[in-house]
Length: 314
Image (tube, rainbow, N blue to C red; front, top):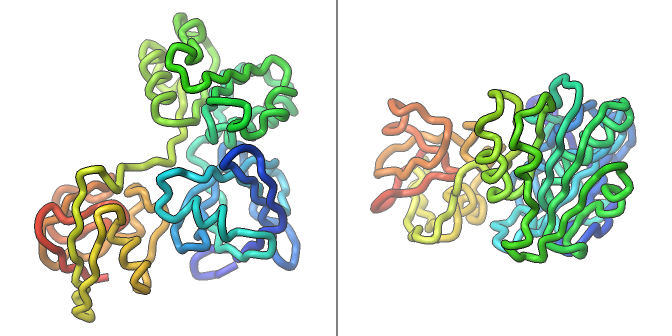
């Protein structure tokens, strides 16, 4: 472990293909030994082989772990994170990993409804296993496009009362959740999956008591948009100018150019990559900066130039 940052140097000790474009990775200390414990719903932040920081939910039991198990979907529009994990993270690869964090922890309840879509099964499966071991009542609904694209299909199918639904990409075949939400219940609901699924559950549960329905979303803010254009960033300390392509963030462009940067969430939510904005008009897309800070600072993981170029001080 790096004592100054808390980061751990872990090694990929196992890898297996779970489904089309989804791989499972097992991480452990090269010398063996216990890892920091975690509760269901926790995630770790990994510096992927390409340098991008990405958060992945932990699937295994976290009581006294000597491994961390994650599943990674290879995203079609990957900007380097999932692509690097799939192409470069092989058994023996060393990765820098932050200790587990949990923003999606189970609260005490008499029963639960667990809803997963696609790769969102990872924290939900961890919860289901823990609840089953405790003997706590729960229902699990897992929605995917097809069996070939379903991670942990056999594991979920083996859970008593679990429902696995494949819609084959047909909007008319989407799972109907209304019966579960028409009448507010006493259960707590946990949902993780793609944005359309979570938006549907938010809409259906609007009449439920506040705090009864919980969501996990690693998407953060939209860093790159279809109408973005290229611009340049000048580094105040060196005078070096770096082109930021339309489909890359400032952080990614700096990293591609060999500049040392500090980052964590890379989704505009943590504040680690905060830099001084020396000049230029920024298009602020983060969820961190206060209004009074926006003339002097920029979050380079998601924000861009609104017009012209920028000068920043790393």
